[in-house]
Image (cartoon, rainbow, N blue to C red; front, side, top):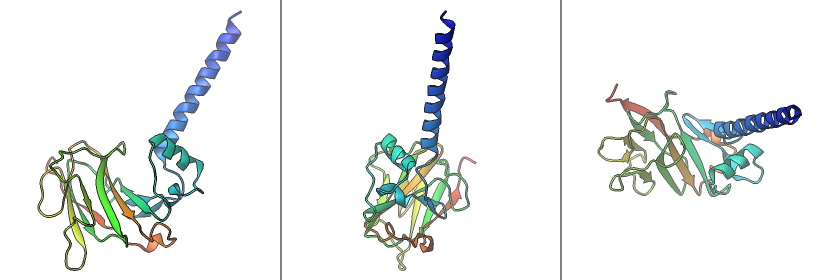
Length: 195
């Protein structure tokens, strides 16, 4: 007598459970389609536009982030160094080169969960176009390490895997279809004291 309703309830709960788990995993796997990779740096220029795909809209809603407009800015994320190895906070890295043309840019580290890495407020947890020390040719070197470094230093905590986020603000890059021709800074591993 209760066998049929019990089987129906079981089937519905399995169907809803599998559907929810697959949706959440799809949202964690991608920000959407149309990714542009420049070395280790990846950006999704269409994620900010009204023509974005449904996955990017759902990802944005789930993360609760307010994204920049198409011409306002473009965030690039790097989870690996220039050789393709995952970034580890137990190692030190140098970010070397120049950024594409932009009125302003910011650089900070996040944990694997994409939340900004919280470091001691007395330490430099972020860098930007106004505070970075440059070479005579306008290039720069930013040391990313949990240990204090001279010159440009981006402090991180030893939490395992992390990501770097370089946001170009007020840049023609955001609306450009010629992103493939742009040069992004390289991420070079300089050592792992624990290894």
